Image (cartoon, rainbow, N blue to C red; front, side):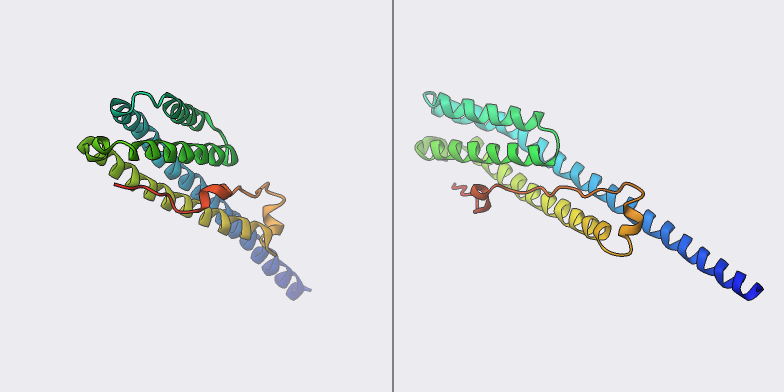
Length: 184
């Protein structure tokens, strides 16, 4: 009888340890997702800070392109105000499209293309876009690990009762999946 109690006690302790370790692992992944999203947000804010300077630089050369400037400004404002991963992704896709239009306008002005401030802003924006891409990839990789863990047996037996829910990926729209074209 005591052997049975000892075995039952050991099994109960092992199950308790498994639940504890799985719960802590899920909390770590959830916190890693929050950190990864913060890194995406930091890079997006850097991008937002560059956009007004870029618009002002282009405005100096292309004053009659008002619609493009308004589109970029509107897209930036919408992106700053976006909440949630899906809404943020949609807003960022609009910003990318507006920036493509702005660069298309800039191509028509050789003096602008030769401007050192425009070149500098373009290089800085390009570097920021690379950082955004890396931050998005890290975020999505972390979401993938987390979602896989909460969906697979036996960790899903811990995830469900403790309220761990799937997270959304930060996805580009179909039009934004191609390479961005930035010319100097």
